[in-house]
Image 1: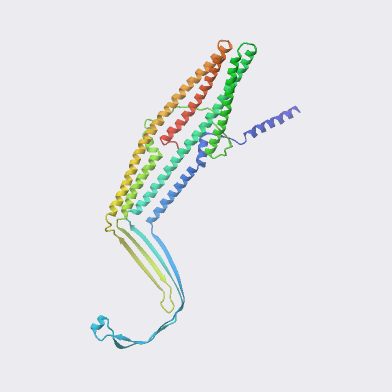
Image 2: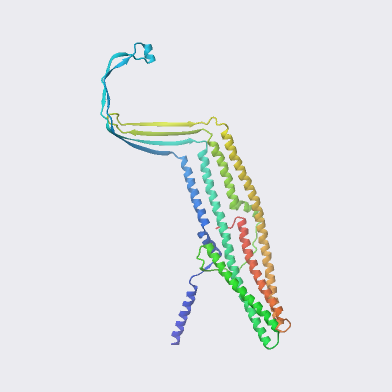
Length: 458
């Protein structure tokens, strides 16, 4: 019977644990990034832009190929009046000179017997098949095709830019959640330490070994610590909601970060990181492609003022029209050449305007490179500073731990008062919080540096 009860309790305990785990999702940083990229609307828009640009490339390529078109029409004329012409003798001229002048005043012996055509309803149809092929358009077709391909490359770089922004935003939300969770642990430990101190002071006060003032100081400090714990727990809920919003989860979803230990490594940074940024930053690559597009637009504009040659062929068929004509068909071949001659320097001014536009874009690219160089250097300094901050925070925490231990021993030996003990515990709490902030700050600066050199992407 006891064995049966034990089995029942075991089953209930396992069921309760399993039930509590339902709905709670543990996410790593990489999983959070993946979910954010799948959910974010900016990424979806960027993907659609890539698809659009790829379609534009295919559309531009079709202009190299022949065009074949067909057209047809049907005509129906209802109840047309009959055509009737009476007979008559044809006119004639009295002399050759009068005939040349068109003076036909005489009457010949040639008789026209007249004409009677019954029209009634008339219907007929016609069809045409047209084939055309541009041979030379001044290079405009080639320029438009090149611009479409450059636009496709530009859309890919735009997607990389959007992805880096989303990943950085996700990293910030993720590490903020880890930071607040660790802060909760420190706050709980601090409250526990103060509770123990207040209990000890109450006992000492009851034995008249300490003053009421010392006890009240500890109680006030405990109340403040409890309030801070309440606030940090609320901040934990808000930080979880913030991550849910970034990754596309319901705001009430129970998610938690898998990183329980914030590992910080001072990885080796190659000295050519600025050069890498020049080669990898999406903003620079996008502007570089835009400069190339502007140069192709110059060629496309110039093409409007160059000779254009095209060839074509057509086949037509017209059905029989009763009482008027038999069916007929015709085949023709055409070639067309258009040569611009004079446009009051229109070409010169229009092409010059495009060149000025290209120059502006090149200057914008140079300015962006300068700004990116400064941004990358600043990101590198921030990363190094964050690592130094983390090392000093570890030293401070070790010293705070030792200080609490020494002060605690002195306090219980009667060599230190409650104020000194409260100060030591406050320093301990502050040192732990500073270490958490330093580690999280390093993680964020690391993500910022990777984004600055163009390596923060999916």
